Image (cartoon, rainbow, N blue to C red; front, side, top):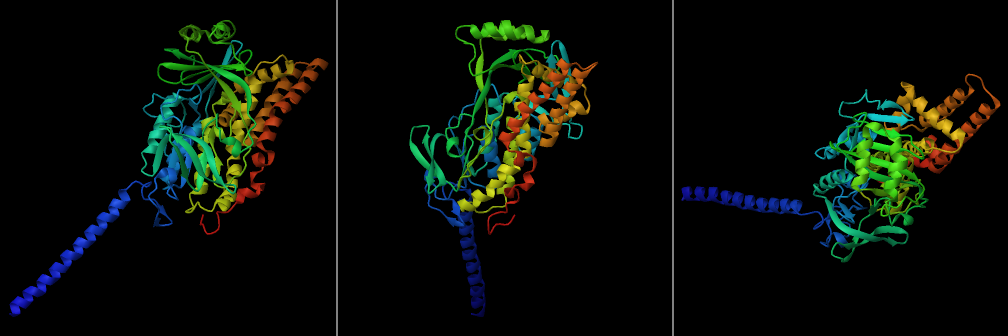
Length: 529
């Protein structure tokens, strides 16, 4: 009997352990199942399950809606997703883009790509390393190398097919379980009492849906139909690019971008794959010769072809004869935001500059780093007014990089373009000769252009150094009243080029950002930085 009791005493604990183990196993399985469930099916709001409503009508299940999945949108989606945000990206067309710009990433932009963990997106797309520029004028040329001595050997510029790069970025973003990439056209922002609550969009199948999130970031590019609600757009179109692809063409200086200071405006050449070279011919104004009538082909052969290096002349003519000529307006738009609770503008929807210097992607990636650092300490994005006030610092913190690249792009385009004004042409020649001096005279400007040294004061110093150098050339060997007059007009013209651009960028934010109150804006109440 005692033995039976002892046996029973052992049996009941064993049964208890078995039951407890079974209960724990079921609970663990349930928790793991919930964790594996897609975020948009059972999202958490402040630690509590939200209604299973799907992304289109999510009630707190999405942290951030991103409109557009170009370079800025895709990079931002990956960055925020990696930080644990639940991101819903809505892109009008998820097929591979085919554009003639956005093909050159400066070294400064590549460094930002590394900082965001996206450097592998330039791999497996036949991207080409770019080590600097070659400048051509009137039969002379000079090679300008990026000052990369202080960086790892992998750091350089990259040139590639824009569409391949964007597809890699999209794949990277979509690989995160908390990032949903959806094809659809956003038709409007959803506002309530002045606060953006989300977006209304039309799916690929034509269904009208709404998506909600505490923060909506608009990155829908240069043709943005939403920017007017979030900024005061003053879009300028100074010129158009005419694009060609030269096949099996050997550039005079391998792994360098080539800039020809032609008449009436610059011509660019740079590799976009191991067998292709992109040519961009700048045509001033908003109208270009007709492609359909053959007027464009004639213009390229009679006006442009005689001005390009002889080594690539035959390839240039062959590209024209092939007939794959494309055009795109070059837009410039300073950033003039309307701080709006619940929404933010990014990328070309927010700020554009002349693409001559290839700085657009560098600015966008730099902006993403700034925004990521601002958002990282925030756990709750739902206090729209506090978040809006806090994010005003974004517009100041982005200025050193953005304003330097924007100002340089606008100024260089005007300086590099031919002009009937003798003083302007003297400035153009002075710029070529100044850069040809090498050393600090070329390293400084190239560091600015490449995004490696985004310092507005350094930009202004070099710009006026070029102007003074031009005046000095005029005064030698002996000054004359005519030369002195041209020199005075050169300085006046230099001021007329750069000062309006600086004014549009914002003098205080550009040169004295620390004096702007938003520079020190603290995180919203209750959050820890």
